[in-house]
Figure: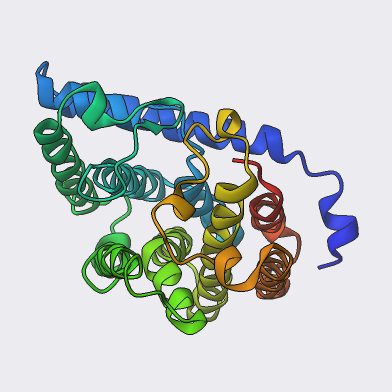
Length: 303
């Protein structure tokens, strides 16, 4: 793929808006059919419908388009992934974890409601996600693939993935991580679910073994780059744009790339990761333009 030629006419802003609208409308339909009128549902909806980037579901949809088309199974899986991500944010923000007061420009769930409600809202979103993932597929050939997707997402979100990453992140506040350990923490805490999002879209859209493998490489590198940039933005980002406080990593003595490498080396490392990710897209030609642009967006983002 000639990146300079294939990418310069692509309108990423419009693409993101269209895909986010698609995901948001599907989530609204899920809310209308699954959320009763009660305090727990109100807290779930409060966090789920906050103004987030929807990066993980958008990556899922873009991966599906790279190997095929977006079908109902892909869209429902994308929504489930966003629910898992939202649950993780609710729990990360709790006083026992990162103790954050602001998320997506709004008071965090435990501030808006209370700590017990926030815990239960996170738990409920996680279990609802797997209820959606295990629902009858719209395409019969996706039944066995859906099991593979469930295993992939569960592994990325569970004690071998995101939860273990959060545990190691907490431990690193008192025992500073080495560079290799920090890479592992970031891969588990953030990268694993992003990689799973990309692979889910590819699997449910009928991707071949080779295409899923290459998109997995893309997802792994993009996922780690996302967290490196997150570390950088926590130091020099604009809190108003980000919708959350900055400077919190240093105040909590967290292990970060800027803390270990400095800002310039951290940026170069993020650039290297994105280059690795984009190289993995070469086999797809122009079909991968959205994923290519999303990779560039991650490295340049301000929130």
